[in-house]
Length: 583
Image 1 (cartoon, rainbow, N blue to C red):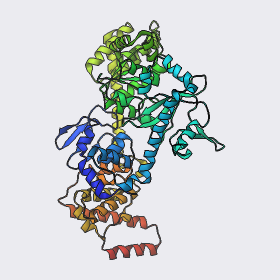
Image 2 (spheres, rainbow, N blue to C red):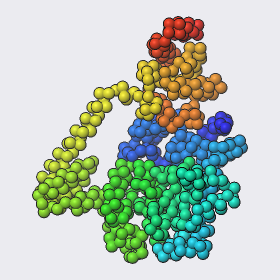
Image 3 (cartoon, helix red, strand yellow):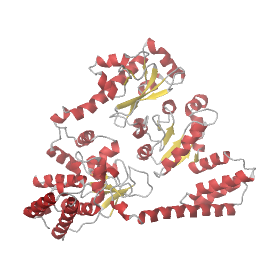
Image 4 (spheres, rainbow, N blue to C red):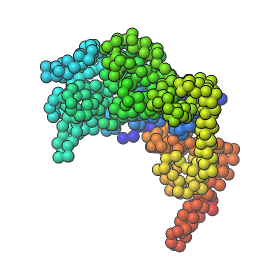
């Protein structure tokens, strides 16, 4: 059931986009807009803009855009109704009763409630004699009862349907457990618990909801760690373990670890800024999430080769967000958890103080891969080091790190500087070629970025975009278009849909408000709508421009109809003539 328009209008009116967006990104007013680094993609130079007057945002880098509801949907990875619910809570508004009783709202709330009940069940089981070996494991790893309770740690008993039966007693059926990722269906159709005989780690989002779980076995079974699959309430690529706690830290940094136990041990030791990814490599979404809460990240991965490789990948992703990245090298232990148990919090604090920035770390790793006593390997090392240093924007940084790399190989700093400059020239040449290729293909720049929205008739679609720009700025032009232009006349189904929605708003006596289309348009459609609305439009000659656009649309429509029978084409011409089209 759709939400009442009056409710949405009031909600949008109460939810100033500048205020909402400022909770996710630092904005500064420049001219008629607010600007900041985009919260939706990696960038160092601000290209994300918010118009307070029009209550719209748009990023000139990744081309995402929309109104306040779309912003919350994108920023919080929420469906439409949950984004509305979040805004309504902030605005002190109650959701309409019919919506609270509706399927969309109820379904998500049921899954979150089910996860919460499952977390309670697992925690209670941890305290039973049946799961005493799991409690012994956690306390043996140095965790206090207080830490176990604070993180809501639990145990999934051995057996096939313990959770299913416990949740059935609370009126949750098997279908709901399957949807929440708490149960699995076999090829033979049998449904059983996903997590069995495992120590359980609940995953809690930034709003305090339990959205998923991780489970660890204590024997040699595989997989060692098992995580919830992606569900309607959980996406492992967009959530981080313990960020709900780390976001409150005052330590001025985020410590990024590889596992649940590393993160929990760090929190217990006083490092309440630790987080971990959820069974997946660090993603751009993770980096964007981290950048909302800090400007510095300390990577504290395992010391084995897999940890080194993961750190190298993470450096590139984090650096693109403009974060200061440091890499901590755990010495004398395989991971942060073991180090803390061996040497204590003060020793770990010293490791953080001694941690180098990511360039130092990458150069050390590079140096370790080559035997610098051999000329051939020395040349390979210097070439790779030059490519690494050439990527730095600052000439001072290039000189400092180029010199360090040269000294490590007992090479002339001046010669190294030449090699760095050569590598930088090659980078710039590749970048220019990419720009030239894009410039030589202007048609592709006019097409929507999402291939599903691609225009079949570019000339007509450009005119259709022009119509929407005019209507969005001056809804009175709909009077001129009445009887002359229908949504079915549009070559683009997407643009025709927007025209229909705009016209419905006008016919109801309302102002054209793209923000209120958040439920009707997909995220990709809203992004494309905001993209086309960014292009300049002159209202002073609106009537003449509209007439020209409609003529183009009808001309292209006739061309498309030309492949049909003569009778169909004549009937089409007669229909348009009787309708008074501009032909």
